[in-house]
Image (tube, rainbow, N blue to C red; front, top):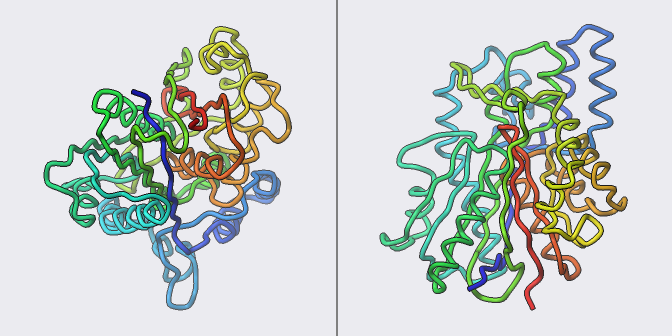
Length: 353
């Protein structure tokens, strides 16, 4: 029984912190690195990044006077206290957006992906309770898989529907990356932090032939790459390491003919008419486009998500799929995301008949 991604609803906070962060970061750098940072920020392809952290009473950003990060870097407990309230609220906004597109009654399974915070009872239980889901709903919480966690969530939903054709699976991805700003004057760390924003997405996966049919998933870990993307839980939040080597290693992986065949199900890049690539950054999208010799407009949906929201970790791929669902018919699509490992995960998809 084929599984279908019927619809997606997305949500972001209302506080745009992107340009305030750029000003804050540049002020921490010596003149030469500051000029480099400014040039890289202009080339990043990001216009907005949204945060659950509110403006101050005077309208300042979280890094401004009186803001969450103004005087000292808050501890992990303070950051997780915000996650415990903000993550469920943002997730429910995404569910509301989904419910405006497709009925979400009769949910039998709930799959939640989130790697920017922890709370117990988990985000899955909080959301299930607030939505009034039946106590019998089966739940799965996916954590700390990073940017490809949306693939794991949708893959799990596909497996559920294929084994239980009557299942109605609600999939939620919610990431609050701006809770993890780190006190650093290292340009490479500031450039990594420049990418990330907050967002949530909700999707319905069923056997109903509506939306995108989810085809065969795939996964591959690039050799000797486990240190390129990693998170460390510190006393001052989650510290992310994002190596500048990541785009090159992704391009090298996609240049391998066997891996390209896995990604494209043997059709080759020319046989794919829809690309949902995780918008991890402009350099990553450029690496994918260059390695696969894609047309200039092939990654427009991903580049649009990056421009409007930055990298929202696991939610980003869902935002891209949401845009593709609203577009022309796709006969052979590929969803592809990268994350800690360095690993690439994805799946094929096609418009329902």
